[in-house]
Image (cartoon, rainbow, N blue to C red; front, top):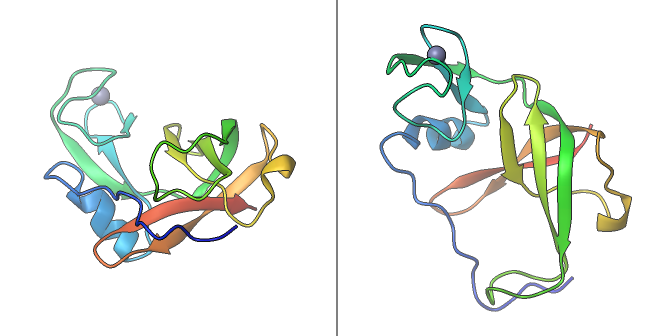
Length: 134
Ligand SMILES: [Zn+2]
């Protein structure tokens, strides 16, 4: 796989997601947790999906999960993405699902239900959680 000449677009942290991205920079997968019912929120947002509470804490997740579903992209939608690449939904041990990419594995070997663990893709201004087989 050759690297494209154009950089891929990267997320820009906003106020609700800043602790998530700061944690990523420190190598910690941080999740917003409802202070009233204990449900985790991902992506970060002001109100709990379960009880609508606006209160929360930030908790470090284990970084472990399982592949819930995935797709392999063969169509280029942005010149910054080298083809083919996978888009994978990982269900974290804590419950939330995160859309990410699996690394360290051929796309043909990805399986639903396989255990994975977080690793970090560092860029100049942001660090992104990716996952590899556990
Ligand atoms: Zn709640």
